[in-house]
Length: 234
Image (cartoon, rainbow, N blue to C red; front, side):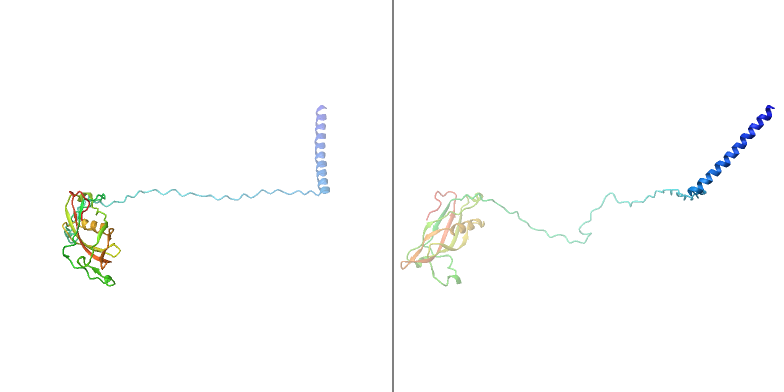
């Protein structure tokens, strides 16, 4: 009796469960119909195949060696005859004696040789055509020095006695012009250059002829001497 009762109860519960499922299903469909909700079947997404990349294995590195050409350890110099060059001519070069002037004047003597005949005749230049330059023996009064600057020679040339004969003319205004060296007892041109440079700044009382100042040629000897006590003497 108890067994039957138990089966009866389980059957009732099963029936109730089925009825509840049916009622729930009906309620779901009724709700879908009233709300317009649609049910879609979800289909599984297709998985795209991913590309597969393959890396090539690295190539085997092979070291290559380059040979360097061998060079001789010593290089023999070429002679001038091997390259076909003529031998250079021998040059006779003499050393130049260069001195620095300390602007120290050696003693000198100035001699105006008014009474002696000229060793050289007066030059005939076209620039003198406009006026006459008299020789010193043709004037009534010869030029007289008013200002004379001493010639200056380098210190290394002091003590050597040198005579320089110069030739120039004194203008009617007492200035010197056309100074030149006639002769020198020394081969060193420094003495003559010093004499010309000094004479160009000298001033004279001009020569006179018929009481009028005139231009006059002068031949003059300048002696450079260490022992002189006076810078110049006339």
